[in-house]
Length: 305
Picture 1 (spheres, rainbow, N blue to C red):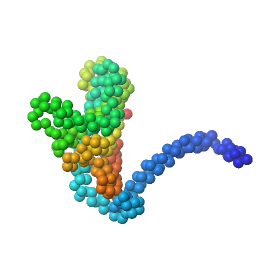
Picture 2: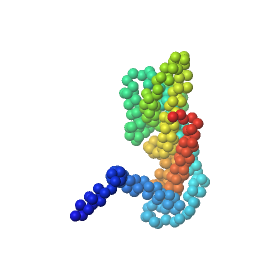
Picture 3: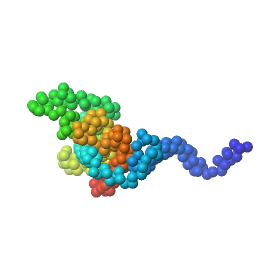
Picture 4: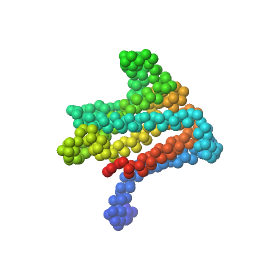
């Protein structure tokens, strides 16, 4: 009788209501996981950012310090260096990656045979294990590595020690990051280029437009939505760089390659300053949010859909 009553109640519902309930039922496991492992940790990190919690002393064993963590970080030399290095890293990686990917995408689409194998080969560094890629580049930057040997063949007398050099460590990591990320952006660009309207290019050919004119007056504006997408995703990824720093330099020498995420990690898990690390994480979130909003508002001036 109970089963019949439940069936009758279910059948009394409108078809659309039954469809909605079924859909939410399938979504429920994912929603529960997102709530437990994403939303709650984010809220918890905001709460403990106003405390001096040392997690080795157990949950709840903390003192509320208000906004002290948010104030102290600006007088912290390591935080300021990490913030500056993060900005330099992002400003260097994002535009160079986007520019190289755009040029390579056009060249592969127009002048290369076997486009699919080439695109897959370029994507391999991006999908490869980041630890393995970083270790390979550490070997390449070593005294007997190909990068150092190439510099010697070119006649450079005092080749820097790259990852052990205060001035060259961050540029070395930037170069590796561009090399590993450019394949993904190139793949996105080549896919977008293949979807461009060919009649516009045919009209430009009839009018006598050259290759550079077509590139700057047609290809670049038509690809502006793709460029906007890649700028946003690359900026967010660059602000969150961690693995190459952890594997290749561990923030050294000195503070030359310390970035925000790595400093957050060391503050939390090396010095047990979980409240201070959470405060820096929220500063990073606010920074990414502001940059993204500026890009989102500014797209109206240069992105054409």
